[in-house]
Image (cartoon, rainbow over all chains, first blue to last red; front, side, top):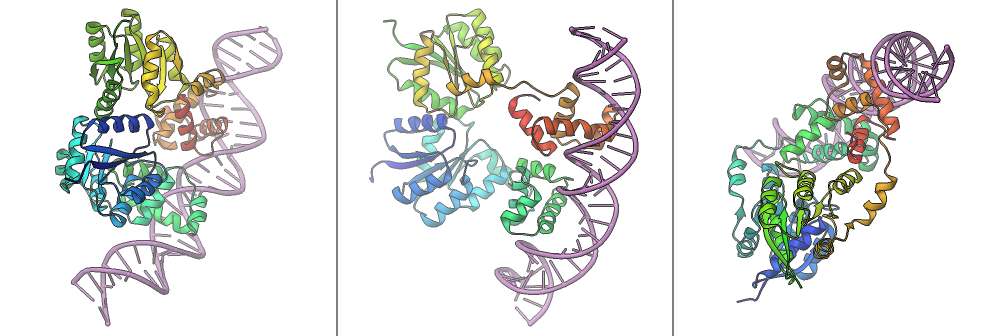
Length: 204
Length: 204
DNA sequence: GTGTCACCATGACAGGTGTCATACGTTCAG
DNA sequence: CTGAACGTATGACACCTGTCATGGTGACAC
């Protein structure tokens, strides 16, 4: 056989990051090559070390786990991606799979499942939380366009119309149009309500 | 010497619970007696096993870590309590210390610090995150009046000016005045920003 | 008793927000 | 090739929001 399964870990909470590394290092057939607190650094590390498996959180600074997944899948398809997240949102699962993730594991699953999932993902087997897998069929589809989603996310974080317009080099009117569209698609009545709704569904 | 330090762990996120247990079990002088997903069960376990140290999260189902700390401190004072939480809020730290906690460690600290904190706490030494310890003295006082706090909280949850006015039997102008006051007291520029700030400081 | 403060109110104003109608270029599927 | 969907843009309108000035009440403290 080809030696240990080489794993890189991306997770922003430091304590959890260290603890997961310890957990995985116990396994004789798994080797943790490195751990990183954000998507950007994890991506660099994947480029350098070409691990067998990348375990990544979704909500992280600088680059989300979903973006990271897409990049890794595109640039280094030999590296399999296992998402490890708190969020049991069908929207996230769908986007993770679309982005090329091989596994989707929840943080409230037993820790014993992690090494198992790593092994299976490293062999190219899909590993998806069974409850979520069924839910994904009955879930509504994200009605937002890429642009609407981006703008709604940032507006929800408190950026003003003017700031958004400037930083995206759009007119303020255009920004308001996108928000208006998003608001009506989500049945909300303000940008903040819309952002909350979308977040809950996992669309941001 | 008196053998290993016996530890009980209370943490609701299953994956983290398992990973922390693995992390601690690596240490030759520490023994994890049991791990529990909520405060009630942890309390029972403390009663049974009388561990040297109880590590507990704050936000947990059934009984919060702060309640748990108070009970354990009262009933089994030989068991030292180490709080392990995401929240760097002076308010939580103060309440934890008042409840009799011996340590307060943040989840974004390096995982290496955990076993160290356990050892020190087991010896009766206080272990408090240094940044937080200073902050607790300089912590600002809540500048909001009762009315401002109430209205800001509900506005932050998405209630509109009109809804607030109707349900509180105030004029819309009055509601806007309170919000305006709160916004300026908190140095914010919208009601939502103000609500977020206040929430972060633990004032809502 | 005279301040001070929380509470409540009104009116007015500037600026922000959500909506609507309309339009143009690009891309991609049929 | 045509239409649909998307991203972009403008202008105009009604309404919402935050601010400010100003004033009234009652409670409590000095």
